[in-house]
Image 1 (spheres, rainbow, N blue to C red):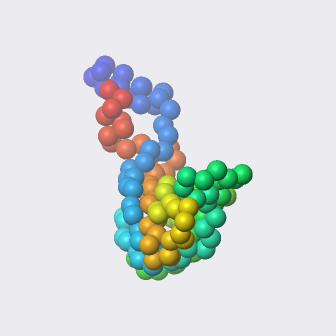
Image 2 (image 1 turned 90 degrees about the vertical axis):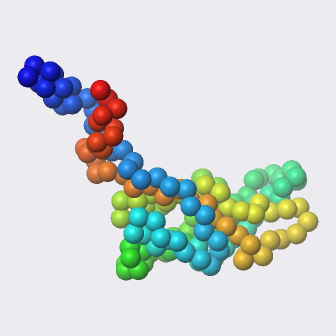
Image 3 (image 1 turned 135 degrees about the vertical axis):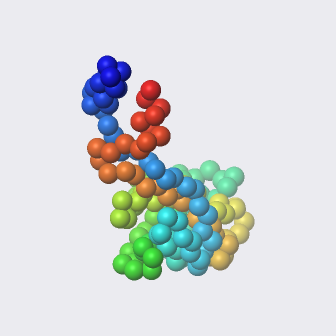
Length: 143
């Protein structure tokens, strides 16, 4: 019984933070969509491609912008712009999910411009527990 009280005391004294319960890296080809955890995530279009071409030296590294849409089971669709440059917004949240653009392929070559159909967005999609909650696996790892 004393051990149970000690464990309960430790649980109450340890800081409890939101922990991700689901994190997944997904690839979405341009003009396509995928389903992750009940979310429909689509790569609608390339809005801008101004990244410095590979192998060249540029004054600024540039930025590419894509438009995505997110909905839950096809309802309540929201459109977002994601940038490759983190200063301009590479992460959005939707219904407790975080969506981060971690890569946009292909990287522009120095001699040609890729066509929009060739692009693939790589997103990291993560769902966190509500603040103050902790997952069972996180609790077990403390002991």
